[in-house]
Picture 1 (cartoon, rainbow, N blue to C red):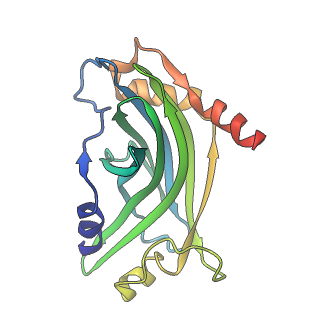
Picture 2: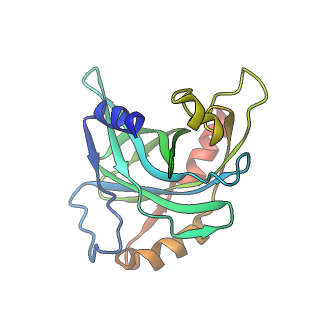
Length: 210
C-alpha cells in the first residue's frame, strides 16, 4: 500500500476514467478521449492475480513533463487466472505517452505491487474518441538479469511470493478494434452514436516504418 501511495503522490493528479457506465452522454467540447483494452494474467504465480488500478499518461509542454494518473474501472471480464479491462483517459488534444499500468494484489497479510510497461506514444486530434489497441500482458518467471522485474524488490517477501520481483512482464499489442468496440459500446452506451477512430492500425504502420 505504501508503494502505491508514494507513486501517486509523485503525480500532479489522479483523474477518474471518462468512460463509465454512469455517464449518459459524451460532450467532448474540444477535448479528446483515448481508450485501449488490457488482458492481465499472472502465469508465473497463478494464485496471485493482480488487479489493475491506475495508469500513467505523460505530456511534454513548455520544457516540462507532466504526468497524470487515471483510475481504471473494475475488470469487465474475469476468467480463471486472467482479467480484462477497458482503460480510458480524457485530455486536451496533443501528443502523449502512455507509460505504465500500476496493478496490485491485496490479500490478508500480503500486499504486492506490479508495474506494467506500456510505453506507447499516441496522438489525439481535437474532439475525437480514439482506440489505441489491445495489450495482452502476462507475468512469467524472470530468468535473466536483463529482464525487467514486474515490480519492485521491496517489501521483499510479498513482492517475491506474488511474482512481482521474481517475475517479468511479456506484453503483446494487437489491433482488436471490432471486438473491443463491441465491448465498449455494451459497457458504455453513450458511445453507440459516436465515431470511434481506430488509431491502433495507424500506430502499427508507423512503428513498422521506423
